[in-house]
Image (tube, rainbow, N blue to C red):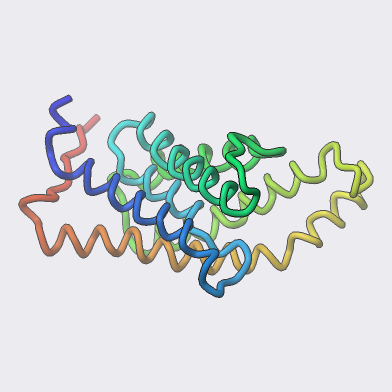
Length: 193
């Protein structure tokens, strides 16, 4: 509870909220398909929220809220969940957990870039597998799976670019804020094992 009274968790929440708002506003600007801050939000949450449950819950809540808004904008009604959402949301949760294990307390430019590339690869592999599994479009064979991955390939490049861009914005923005306001946004000390 004491941690919630310090400014740092609120600033982290603000950064995720800004990414959510960017996602909701993005469809109104010309952009590449799959160019969105979702993987980066999961990595950011995993890297910076001290508690694992917040590291997963905050990005997932951000994705879900932005999905509600976008579904309303495009479908004209609120759709709580959509077909195959569990593949995407499960991937975001996995990314947040991996970032919490690998980046928490060890953020560097190289690690964040590697995490952004790895996140794009994992998202591509897991979600396209989910599209293929039980699909009426792709035969349930190795050839069908290969065709599904081939169809998703153009979107992978956009995801990779967006991860590198949004990781730079989120992680770099927080590092810049911590440099500018060191007393307010001091990093919590990690307990030594």
